[in-house]
Amino acid sequence: MKIGIIDYAYTRPYGVEEGFLRAAEHGYETLDCNIFTDVRSPIFGMALPEFEREMKRYRAAFASAGLSASQAHGPWHSPDDYATEEARKFQFDAMVRSLYGAAYLGCENLVLHYIMPTGAVDRDLDEARKINLAFFADLVREAERIGVAVCIENMPFLGQGLARPKEVLSLVRELDSDFCRVCLDTGHAAIFGIRPGDAVRAIGRDFLRVLHVHDNDGARDLHLPPFSGVIDWEDFSSALREIGFAGSLSLETAVPKEIPIGEERDRKERELAALARKIAGR
Image: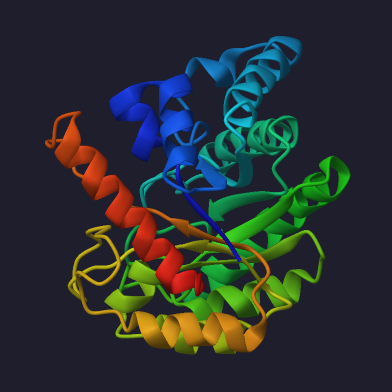
């Protein structure tokens, strides 16, 4: 099992080229590319040829450090961003652009949040599920054409019926495509009191494609390093081995930005990479 980390853990403090070199030096092999999360980014306004060139420049930067992209994250949205058909169409188009971007990055997986048409609390779970099925059926057809899998992520919102891993798995099963799979977020599961190891076993090898690995206090989405919160990481590691997980163990956490570049930051970054190796059984 390879280990990876969210790209901004290194690009924010060091910049792109130096950041990727440091990530590789610390033992990471893959990246979670988060350049598509903000729909206000200039890349969403680029003509497709210019967009393709920009993505390939980014790919060349991490490839030169010996890294690959195991996954990318599509446009992030708040629970209120999908209240209307117009809003959903805007996000749909941004997601299609992100699918193209992932393909240009050489990345086979794009992580997306399910649709939240009534905000942080579902007023009608059946209607929310119906909207999601229609939305993702159309998107998965685009994913099949482009050749990048849509990976739907469980979320930390207690008032939503689709937030838990088992509901995401049910949605993915019903969409019935090899280009639609599950992203398991360990911290989001913990907020529901769900042991991530149990979620791994329930989802299984056939449907679990991508991981967002981080810890918390069981109540807040804190994105803490593993072993600093409530999650049973030994059980999680065992579960991944039991199902023969073939993807990348990708951290969605980083050394705090307040720690300046220098020896202490380097030490903590190396310690974080060591935790990823420990969970991956390496």
